[in-house]
Length: 150
Length: 68
Image 1 (cartoon, rainbow over the protein chains, first blue to last red):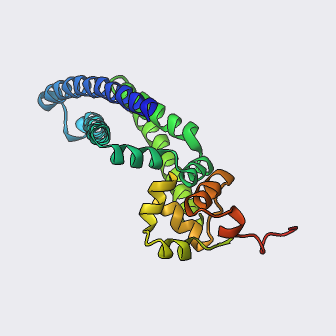
Image 2 (spheres, one colour):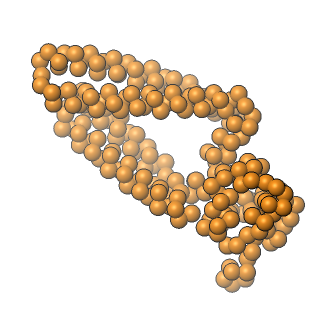
Image 3 (spheres, chains in turn red, green):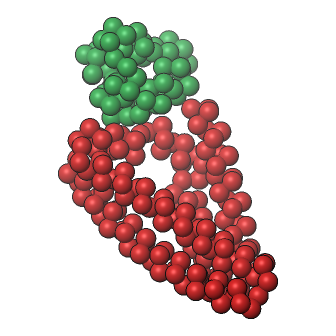
């Protein structure tokens, strides 16, 4: 359990640095929206809007995870439940069947690439986002199927 | 695969969540094992049997398994 506690603390620091990065990008995006408000029409803010949404959701998810890990670090029972949940063999089999860590890594990379591409090219941004979205749907359907099966 | 886990749980007045906590798994896995939807790995089967103070064969029913 000591190794797991150390791992959770490392993850908390990693999530904090990602949150800081996300907030910096949100501020940059807000700045761009303010410029567009004066010059463009409604649709011109679409890319920035989607970026804001993704970054806000990411920040929210990581804050939730940090709170979850902090609670687990305070209580031995919560820590063990967290550990059991992460190392549950049935969950691992379902995850493996649904594409595993590789699929999830691809989705994360594509979404991040989409966010960065949004600052340069709208078409690339939308294409990457659509690709990431389809991958997410395929992975979700596969997970639901195997969850029912096992 | 059929098991006696539900019967043993009731005998020891344990919930699925309690058993799952003790053997290092989740409640959903215990549910799936009891329903026969999921077959536990050797390690998990051993942990469950050991928790009840029994052998694996006394907890899990292998009569349906082909070739045995």
